[in-house]
Amino acid sequence: MHSQNKFPTFHASSLRALDESMRNTGTASPGFGPVGPVTPEVPPQINTPASPGFGPIGPVTPEVTPGENEPAGPGMGPIGSVMPELSFVNRLAAYVRFFHSSIDTEPFHIYVNGRLTVSYLDYGSFSGYFVFFPGTYSIVIYRARNTKVPILNTRITVQKNMVYTAAIMGTPAFHSLELIGARKQEVPHDQARIRFIHLASNTPAVDVMVDGQTLYSNLMYTDATEYFILAPGIHSIILKRNNSSIFLFDEPKASLRSGSLTGVYLISKRDKSSVPDVIFSNEMPFSLN
Image 1 (cartoon, rainbow, N blue to C red):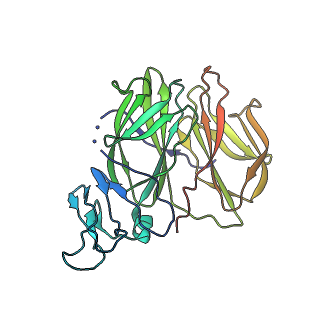
Image 2: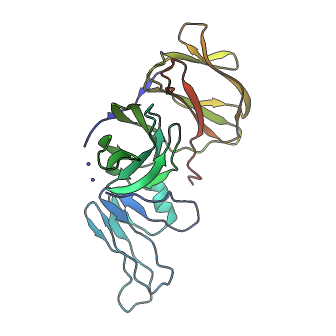
């Protein structure tokens, strides 16, 4: 049996900021510090001052020297100098996405540090990845039809060089946020990596079988495995009740691409059945070079 990772549960609290997930375009994109946007970009016209932003210890103002035709200099972000270059962000940023795994039938609006970040997130759906600088962030979640009373008000703390899925769990009466993290990683082209995450409150512990062999035993609610290394290609994946012959999921032709990271998420069905919905998700935000 492999070791199990328990990830932390966050319940109530509150704060402001977050933005588009940065793409590997070769230019820096704004990120966000724990209390506001960090804007470390060099302006398109070299003699135009950069707009100031705010980090946790004060303004971030990478201005052009007055009267000088020079590029913007570094500012200060949550963990030190903010250089307007792509490599800095890739070295220090974390990547966070949101996942609606609650059996609550409503789509959700998600606010990060007071800013609407995700709208109408449906059951079983993931948001895109967002760039977070290391720090603590306020997360407030509302049902889309009622933005006056939050269903969850909490905080999360993210660390550098991590990739997170923030899973909204629970029932219409009670919600929680599970932060499921893993280190950034590149996957060689001769490998595919896969892990299993049990978020189905109505489903008992399960055994994971791949190609007829037990890969993991006794995966319990709120457990996540490490990534397992498989060969790229077609694989049989079966989930069954622990120490039982009762199958809960059987996929004989799961396709795993070369160089891929895949998460297999078990979530509760809305009819409260003990048989979970199973969702395969790409967990590679984008190139992490």
